[in-house]
Image (cartoon, rainbow, N blue to C red; front, side):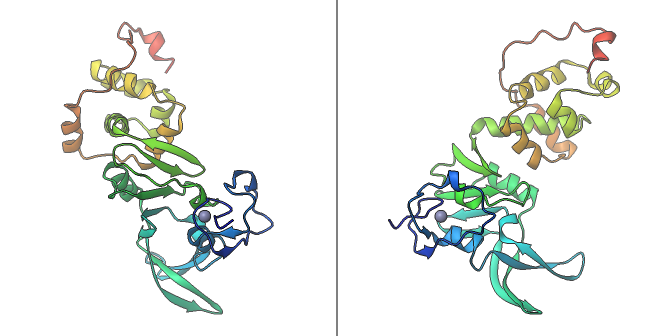
Length: 253
Ligand SMILES: [Zn+2]
């Protein structure tokens, strides 16, 4: 058996997992005693810990490799950049630069690299996510590893993101959009058909990992961008019949 214990890619590194590793039940090849280069490097190898130059604090910080969101093209890591080494005290680690921001992750999801590629988003930074990340073969429908979940992104993703960001542009918080519990004073200001179109659209994915992924990367856009996307029709959803609403109902939001 020459496949990775965790992800089943070709493997040649020893199976070195700490006693605190708890995801054995997710191992793709439980009878293997090997790890592939990617899993090994982030779990036990030279990317287990990294140095990062923290511009704000003007000093080097140590990061766990598992805490990074990553984009690979084939087997090559294209973001962030890991190169060179730094030594401080007795710790010599590789150096990571250009950590992925949420804005950059948003761009990768809207405009992914040429396939095959792999996008893994570390939501908490506490868990090993690379072993579970699936490789994408298409730019129009592709898997994204979002913490421990696989979320599939297709053309609907952009539409939902636009709806979400337009609702943000109307002044609603991410918490309000996620829950549907809009503050009534804000609602009264934007209470028109467009709001109900947007709410009807986002309602379709409420309580899913997809809306959580969109929440993670959604940005308040400039007014110009909002104006541009307002011309895009929202996704058809099951018919709603809301406009007949009275102040008592509004207070329920
Ligand atoms: Zn592996």
